[in-house]
Image 1 (cartoon, one colour):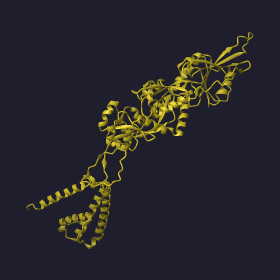
Image 2 (tube, one colour):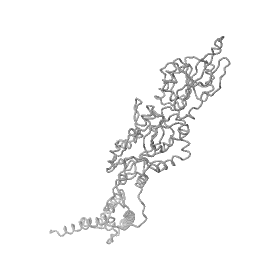
Image 3 (cartoon, helix red, strand yellow):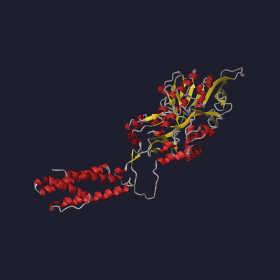
Image 4 (tube, helix red, strand yellow):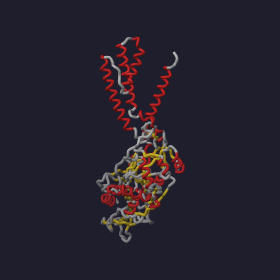
Length: 571
């Protein structure tokens, strides 16, 4: 047997970096391909096998080959190392392997069974015949049917047919079922219409490899989750429990699920953002104070105090100390006159520099103030604007959606900002969220690569009109297709996704799917909510624009009247 074993290994395993051999020295290995030798104990030593050796070739030559095969396939699910290209060569003839559940997920399995030519009545053991078998794998039915591939004769060391024992069964799967775990989520997946940006990728895969797509739709569990005992709900749970072959529906690169499933190459990049409550317009009475920033106002107040102190010092230096109260009043009036660009009386000659610098400062300040006031007088100002994740936190506005999958990408972020974002997230049922259209609440939506949006069905047009699209994303991630862990379909999916991305089809499909299935008025409303409509026409000044000026004027009149009445009081 060792002659045949080495012949098959050198012929069909030379593309692998190394080979795992489960054997108790049943044959003498003499190939040049590196091996990792493992015994025939059904309790496989994971510290030996799963060390990222790159051993995609697996040879089993043990009496308990069924137990080793099933245990190895089971351990693939609990280890991070992937075996998407695994190929089995099994010596022993235990055809129960082709009846095991694990055989459904492996295509390249060859069983070598020792047979004899009983027509040779002088047989002395030299005419041993070895049959090589596999399972059909393809087709709608009879996928476990055992198929004879070839026979090898020890006497002349030749094959009967010289067939390729490891034909690519994945290239033409002859109608084999492809179970797609998903739910209705526009524009990614619309099972009822067999449409969607990601649905079209999977349907193209099924068409290319001649598979029959069937849908496993879970609109209640949606994205779902995987539990530590390999059960779960939604798309993720159905994949973990092997109910589905492939999962689609805006699945991100979630670290937790990478321990349970296979991730393909990304299909598109998407950003998670919000349509948050609209900011409130600031009243016109505060307009006079908006020409300068608060920092500049502080600097200006400090400058006024310095100038007042300087004038007071000069006046006191040139007069007697008995005029202290009068000098204070004069200093106040002179400072006021300087900054209001009023004429000032003759000042002492030794203070010309102080007054000249003060007048220069007041002139520049007045010019800047007039320019700033003119630029903002007719421009609406808002408070409570939510444009990025920091604004969202400061606003204390709750944000949310119908599943915790919206924040799965943030669980492992230890920054204070995103911890607060996660704490402010609210998960509700579609009916509950629909009621929040009239409340101060931010709805999570997705900003797609082509400029469209994934909008929950619970968001109404009236709710959008009361909200504004954030200009920045809360976070972004890549959308992927998920499959069973170490799935043999993953490399094929990767190649297809890369080909589709190179052609630019994702953006084209996004546009087509949105036009066919989405409410474009709703899409337009979301998009326009984040943009202030531009108007080139001139705006007439109204009372609102001068409200602040009138407020200051009235305040001044009131203070003047009070001061005048105070002066008239009897002494």
